[in-house]
Image (cartoon, rainbow, N blue to C red; front, side, top):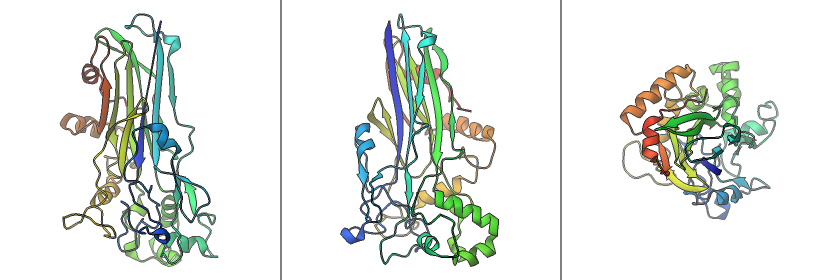
Length: 339
């Protein structure tokens, strides 16, 4: 009897350098745009790194330390994980009773922090400190909002060219809790009263408050009895950057630039625009996001079409087994939607 076990994890990173201006950093030196002081750079604290190490265990341990907080914060936004294991007597069949499926569904989400160095303008901090508003309970850091943003499949039996296996999929996302609360208040109060209460002007209530965007990955993992493994990220939010780890090692990543000018050319720190951020915000309004206010079947049709014309999956990694190849398994198995 042979035991087969494998795991796949996606890690989502908001790239950025040090934003601690008191220690030589730059308050706007991250991939989160500022848009003239009216956007998110003061609301999100970036992860203070521009890349992640090859070893997943190291990522779990590293922390960023900011003067606003008395504890270290994770240096990533989101983690999505699948673990599969089973026993096989002959490298072709799977013992049903031995199949196990694990995810990180019980892991607490990362904090969303509010920058608050002395002298920095900050819309959310101003609201937190007002005596007549209690939207955020006075908190300058809250767990990312993940409510209704997780779908998990069971461990599904598969057979490819006579070789049995199992696979599972998880679609998981998260968003900024502060923006989610502001969205609730926007619709509760109405646009005019919301502007009056917050003191914001009309340009400061763009699409990301009307419909907050979600960072997410659609992760799938397959393991066959002959030892073939295949991890695919069928879809990922276009913002920010995502990594794929298989068996605890970095295997693939999405393309991501820290910023880009709307007029073209190379982005520099303190420039206020980021085209990829704008694309991400607008995606939430249509069928390209699994968490947009549309039907799941609409998202399935979008993914099915996207995978037929490329460039999908967004990330992938496979290892050949004794009889099958990872590419053969990939060609036999279409996306497994986890709902």
